[in-house]
Length: 346
Image (tube, rainbow, N blue to C red):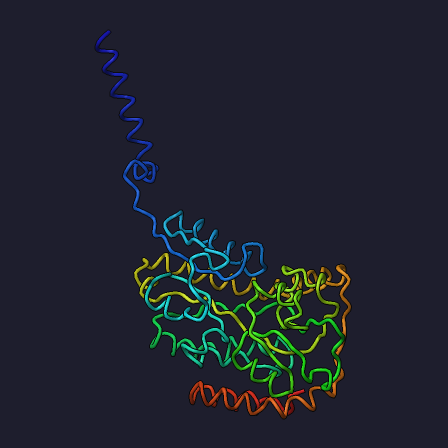
């Protein structure tokens, strides 16, 4: 009886060893797994926002493809407490591994990043997006890598463009004169002053209250922010001027990236490229959905008089060139190249 028990035990051990040889991963799972790499991603918008959906998907795909070895935790609504005006310093210091950079807000830290934030410069969003990704981004990254220890991976261009929302319809150049309109500072604010408006810097989170109390009578922002703020409750018109296509850049800290194993670097870059494609593919759908929300809420669409641009552009061109000079010689070369490529602005 004892002999048979021993034979059975030996046979069981041999079978187990055979299957372990066939499936070496099974043996590895018994070993302690490496601690996952945890990254923090500072995101400025609410988790329900359009860009946030893409960012969440990106983080999920990186975790899935890496088998949980790289976990990127998004912190929405700037919940980490970092200011957008300090975004470059925050990522350079490694306080977060990933951050959003926006032109207008980063003007104080680096005017070259703010150079993209120009009013009435672009013919349409496709032109702006092509320029951001193919002309500007390579130059931007040389500067970011050298000065700020980071690299821009994705350009988030908002659906539609930055629109003008108002209590009264705005169609002509004359309608802008003395208009108390919300902006976020930077070259866009300078351009609105140049055409005769009275721009005021108001944070997105304070927009609804400022409009409700009559501090301002109009606002420029994206469709996404306008719907999240329920503009139809305090404003009446969506005025479809082509104002700005200011991108938000998603950047990664280079020290953190370089410390990743090669396979994780590849997964990360692959998914960043996929996020860029997602942003481009979804912007038109988002434009349709958000504009419908505004009109369903009772807002009316107003199309501007084409003569507006004929009067406004000569006034804002000095702002473009002044902003380029402030941003440095690279910006000046890019602006000249853009204007040469295009025979006429409109």
